[in-house]
Amino acid sequence: MSAGRTPATGGRRRRRSPEVAEQEIITAAEELLRERPFRELTVDEVMRRTELSRPSFYVYFRDRHQLVLKVAERLTAESFENADIWYQAAGSGREVVREATAGIVSVFERHGAVLEALADAAADDHEVEVAYRGTQAFFIEATTRHLEREIAAGNMLPCNAEETARALSIMNEKYLITVLGRKPLVEPDLVVDTLTTIWVRTLYGDQA
Image 1 (cartoon, rainbow, N blue to C red):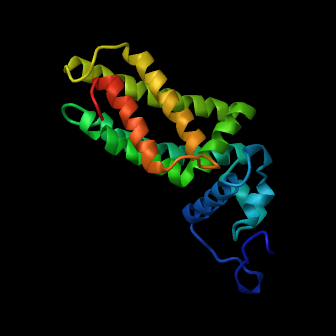
Image 2 (tube, rainbow, N blue to C red):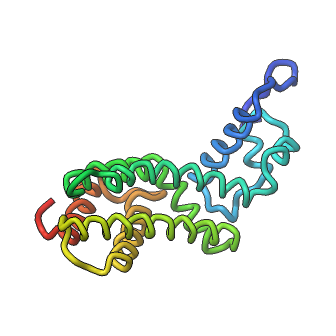
């Protein structure tokens, strides 16, 4: 069983809570997505990376599409938690742009290969694309509302908040997938410096 994990002694699989079992499947899917695109992901391969039986997969997930959406949901929540540092900043947000950016970069540093696989999946699978576009729209909307607050408070240069949010959010996503995806190209610290400089100079008109 070189391709998977060895079941518990005597062929009996140890019992685990539904939450633990579901997480084990999600973790196995993430491991595989680091190695190959979504279109090559199969239920058989995912379950061989766990100590669960193949039929157990369908207790928790309808199909591999629902599984990959669950992976995306978890990583999106982690990314938003870091972006929220800036969204919730009191007063001028420029001081916390670097902190929020560093947090988001750390997510890509750990999960960049998986996030690249999810982006690829959106191009091949309608269900994944809908969820992917929804996540993208969520970040753009949250960023738009924050830019509007910063402009109204006089903390930021006037601009079209929605289109600026769209441009910066999509730039972030594409850049991070390119430089910290399956084959990282740039050191994370330089990525943080680059993105912080772009956001601060674009929004606040001064140096990061």
